[in-house]
Length: 258
Ligand code: NAD
Image 1 (spheres, rainbow, N blue to C red):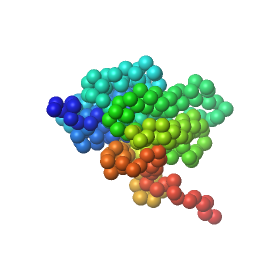
Image 2 (cartoon, rainbow, N blue to C red):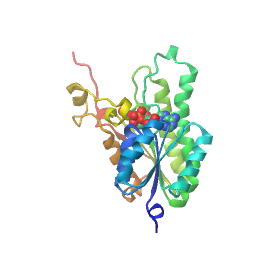
Image 3 (cartoon, helix red, strand yellow):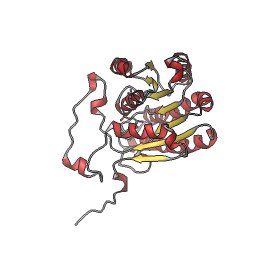
Image 4 (cartoon, protein in one colour):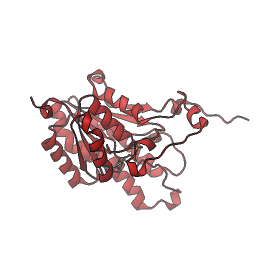
């Protein structure tokens, strides 16, 4: 059997930077073939060079909110790598802050929903036939902000709340063939996982780290580790769930001291 037919195929949206880049890298190292799908061509091309020695990796530029582009992405993944075993819906507008509610325009609100929520729907819809055939799985990136908020984050929080609901809905519709789960990251520092031209050296105070019950902020690899487990047979009895990976931050009770 050729390499392209023997190794399972993962499609990682937003796979060229940040958490998605770490997920793509981890999957390649575990023997998966990976289609990196990202709207950023510069980051995607960089990834291909970076990951070339790790295994079979292909980049295709896509806006996950565009139905025609998503259809083409699935077709291309089939042609280049084979039927999809794992879809990681990671692409997203990751900045939660969209300004004061009174100034939040409909275009911005709609764009967050289109990319963060409709993108998950479209990719899942068009990958479903493959995933049913391969008995594969879907992993969606939610956020702890689906259930908790700071001010001025309405569009982001609403989009991620939708992702968590869509996750259990898909799990029921696509079962028993396909397992569908969500990972909700907390505060993950992605500065070192950006493309060269926008990479930055992060700085965080002791307080930033110490406010996490595990004593540190999150890294993209923390999320990639959960992806590897959820995609494996070890998680064969797990579907429709949302896994919070936030160093325990959302479990901490906050009281103001006098
Ligand atoms: P990031 O901005 O570093 O990476 C996101 C990637 O998605 C980029 O490569 C970007 O080009 C791509 N992308 C954006 N819009 C796209 C589109 N329309 N079509 C295709 N690709 C597109 O962000 P990140 O911090 O790595 O976040 C990844 C996911 O994790 C997002 O869904 C985000 O909401 C979620 N998340 C991140 C954090 C965090 O602290 N970093 C916390 C909770 C949830």
